[in-house]
Length: 225
Image: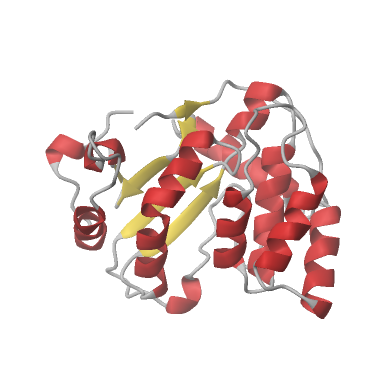
């Protein structure tokens, strides 16, 4: 799998410096913590950027599998929202998109919003990024309406979690995660591209599920940082 790499630096967008409930600055969010996975459940860390083209491919190929396992409490999913494309273009749309997704999580709509926003990923990587109305379109498609939609809109317009998202990107960059998408299982990086059939382009989701739920990455699929 291709990794979309970031260079150090980028826009300095400033939000209202709020953190998601129960989350420390620089740390990932756990969108399915309510599933209450057992303490010995494998920890899966996903590093993604809503504007990263390869992330969109990965989401289409493996997103449903990872989400279902997290919702069923079979894995503990931690999502590190990154701003790789912001760093590459000088824009701030990755940070704003990540913030809007956390706003959706506040309204209980992480999963459908996550899917809807990836589906609206701009074809061109520019500083402008997502059109402003793409976020609201995604929110409505995710089922937000009434007071929930209003709360999400205010949260998004205020850039409530922009600073938080950028702190996550900075922390993960320092930890060696400079590109997206990246996936680790109990701390071991998974070369997920090795699960993709070169002829069909399809991912072996059955084997992916086996690896994630076992917490054991086969040596031939370990990725060297």
